[in-house]
Picture (spheres, rainbow, N blue to C red):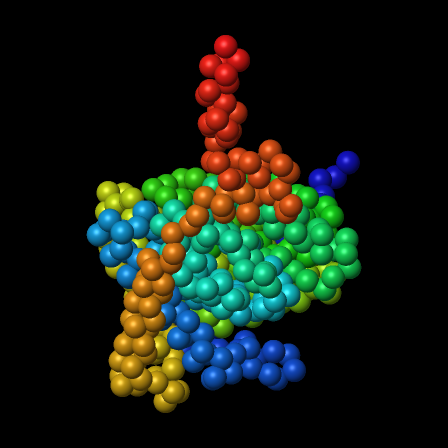
Length: 378
């Protein structure tokens, strides 16, 4: 029998706004001629990115001053989260995040101080408000992809035109949960978008050491899933690829995979010191590709931005970040009742109501009068 080729694959890389802020005018338009992003939309999303970084900077200081636990900065990855968040429909589609998607979560209605509450150890930061379609931040690496697949499966079973989009890093694609989620999502053709923020580092392990794949995107090929790689620091490319994937899923086309090539400009978290394992020249090279710098240059070239507007936005963003911190630190201390109110359905069974009232589980604690029973019986 002759040898024959049974399968071929091609992974495309999409870039629309390059490192020099030059726009590919053809790719920046949809086939019907509409712009992928209008000038007004670019301005709005740029402001989200700047505000996100302002909160990042202040959160770093909070941790260093002992006012908050460890914190993972979003610095350098803002365009990936904002672009994907913009493509999803607020109040309809579900965001299933990792922990570097702050701006997208805020865009979809999460109060900004909730993120800080989470990292301060206050569980109310995970109590997503009604009508906000997202899950809490996910710290275990990769487990949220299973949740997203389940949510998307529910959408399909209910015949709802909704999509789940889940975010994760390149390191998560080496986890078993990733492969289980991808396989299930593809086999059942659920409306889920897998969005990988390939920031080149799985904590202290470089991408080339934690996987032998030439690209992260090609991992989706094994599951028969449409896949693409984009410049994750290019807002236009992220919006276009995310919109394509989300709308394909909404129309019944099943799951998709997006690899957004970006870089983590800060440490993995404030508990990390990346100087111990990263080359300073590598960081310097990626700093020149900073998505905020690229987008600002684009806006300036189109006469939509200048130094005065930037100074005003920086001041506004710092003031907003300060207010976010004030809100998080000024929240009323939780009561012990909340352990019962937010864990059990009302009405509470009698034994739990007694525990709630006495904060005791043993009979003597619940009824101290029993201490005199033996004397009364004598």
